[in-house]
Image 1 (cartoon, helix red, strand yellow):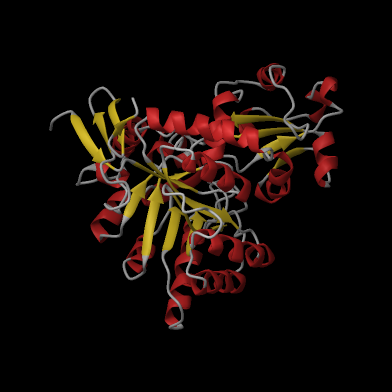
Image 2 (cartoon, one colour):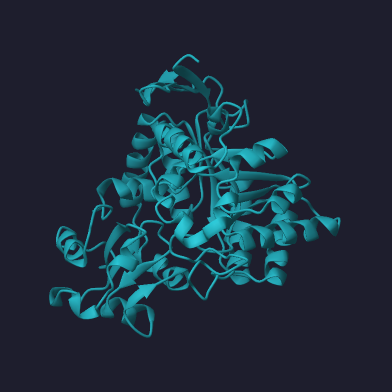
Length: 426
């Protein structure tokens, strides 16, 4: 095989665009070994616009190896809310001041439900900062060869700044945007606004942006044991939990499809994947409006789940680079269930459409990391693909982004060219 690969419409199918820009100036905790290391790194931070101190990237093993005593928090941080996020951004630690801010009963480790309360409080809100971080994200993604992305957490303020950049000729990414709904009332508020954007109303027809649909979180992540499983995590008395019940989720799907919008469903655990697949199948059986179903992650899926996907209007979006971190705890947390982990070869065999992304900034958007993840997963015992892996990094619509392509060297891991609508970006 020639080392140089040309990838048309080079595509990261699952990332967080604004977070990717923010990560360019974050303090990274990936290498910390103790709470003393963490607090030392916190000293390098300044509070954000909302006067929170936020750090990112505690490694998955950190919680088990470093029990937290709240008294360890430096007294200098007593008067400012502090959030220290885990690597997967589905768990974290808050201090006493942060606990009071969100009405939590006590400081310490928190999960998805508490984080849902925190995200609006720490989100970047002013247009100048949003714009700056979008430009940083674009530069990073283009330099790593990407011309097409699916943004899984677009806000309306972010959308407005992307439109301004695009219409000013300063934008070099094709972006498909999804907006998050965490409840039926939130969905009712989102739907008309997202529908307007999807129809081009108020966006002046920005040529490189598409508002596609709504994203739902059915569970958390495996590393923080928030992913919803059929059986308990090894050595634990819990199996994670679903964030939506089936009746509400069914109504949400119906409302989205009736509006002509796609659904993107975060489902990492095998029980969450089954809840998504079974509910979608129930909605389809009612012979009402139909739409596209995106299964985000699908990291742990039983063979029967993949069989059911074959009859659904679905695309699956997986992140091979996640294996590089998840392999450190996969057998310990899942036991024999690792045989159902990262089932890209099973999806390929079943001819279920699937695409690769990074979940940036959780992992860096980087083609070489996809290649490494697939290869190391094969060494671990997860079957590798039979077809070319880079086909799953190519946007499926050949008419959106014509004359956009990336030259990638599979031996060196280098991006040798990135062309956006005929214009070289490197």
